[in-house]
Image (cartoon, rainbow, N blue to C red; front, side, top):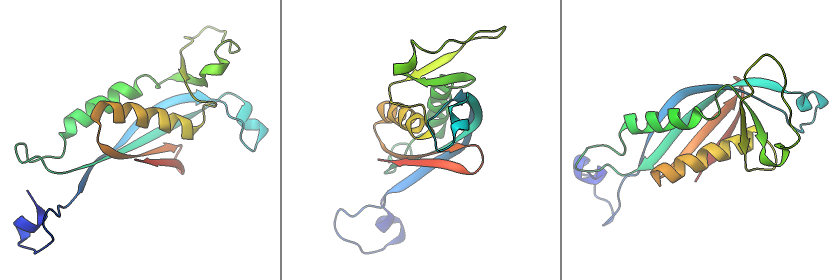
Amino acid sequence: MLFKDFYGINTSEGDEMRMKVGVEGFTFDSAHYTKGSSEACLNLHGHTFRLDVEIEGEIDPHTGMIIDFTLVKNAVKEILADYDHKVIIPSKDTGDVVLSGPFHKCIKAIDYPEATTEYIALDIAKRLHEKFKMKMRIKLYEGKRNYVIIED
């Protein structure tokens, strides 16, 4: 339904209201190392990451929705399962990383130069965009206060 039709507002022909729907608060726990400004970042360390997703589109007159929230939730959960409780590394380092000990050795390699929050966010955004082929915005938090926003 058009915004102008519902509210009786006169706008230009073909002018439609774009809307966004969002789902917030997805979390996953992962470890990584980075070449940050601190040598400490090169140590293997972990974070709780939080992901918020917004998808932009027009209301489908047949469903009354831009996209079903359940589809978004299920897709995000499926994608994030690949990162949860894993050590995230850049693919270039797969031959150099050796994990040893009385624990599971779960590694998630990403095809980016580093395993920074920026590149992790790009990897997730790419996969979501491939799934939905809609304009979207994601916000990935590394801990509680640091985040990356990706919009297409």
